[in-house]
Length: 394
Image (spheres, rainbow, N blue to C red):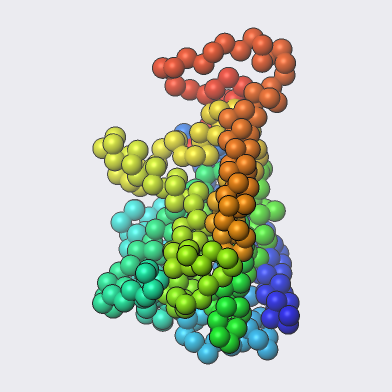
């Protein structure tokens, strides 16, 4: 029970430090000109400072310093993993911060991300095996490439979804909580049980950082996290994933669904990042069909589509939170509850989410306007009737 309190304490430390330091970072961002102008693909209507990832970094490093003084969590320092995660966090935030100020070209930014991921792997945060069909051991160079690939995909997935105020921080916070629950419960199945792990610590600290940043970033945002924040959050989430998946005990079975035990270590990380991964995949396919580069920005992300069907900024973000929570906790719950009952509950929640996503703008529209609304034409593009046309999608 003491270790549980330590995790709550770490999350609180990360949240408090992030919340307190972020306004100071905003002042610095304004003074050095790290400000996001209003572009065609943006939803904000006036320039807003970015660089919020520096405040998130401070919250995470503060949580690491606090953990070193705790009786149970200090055990994570027996491995070099936490040092590698801190160095990787510093490098990813640095690359993102430079981009926030000077706008790096895509190749340079990707190279910086790869250096951060490779450095973290060099300190031991890498896959040692894959928990597929028991244990699948591949050559070390192959596992290293897979590790770096996981980190790069996660970092850029978070960056892709960072299109509305509070969206990326909220979805990563939901993912961190879901992953914490799964990793914590899985630890109890080991012999002997040990709930102290790098993956669980990083998930708890990451959740705290997101909670501390959201009050400054939720609509209307006073500060954007920028690439310094998106890349950092992606790296930390991938660090927790790699740390747990790479060292998982394949004989550990959680809950009644033992036939899924060999697959959950792979399914859970994908589920907790379901919305960002889906958005990134659709964006890459969409841009490839147009003959564009994958990193070429457009206004067709999931969040932009939500605005076009008539959702307000806040409602679009909250609905995407709802979708992320259904996917993440629905899969995590497979480890705790009977599969049949869970499937029914998840199906009902998905049905509710679909209805709210498709129909809520119409339900909330004044009755007079609802009756006068003509059927939507099939061909012309543009905002749906009732959409907030003051917002310019990113």
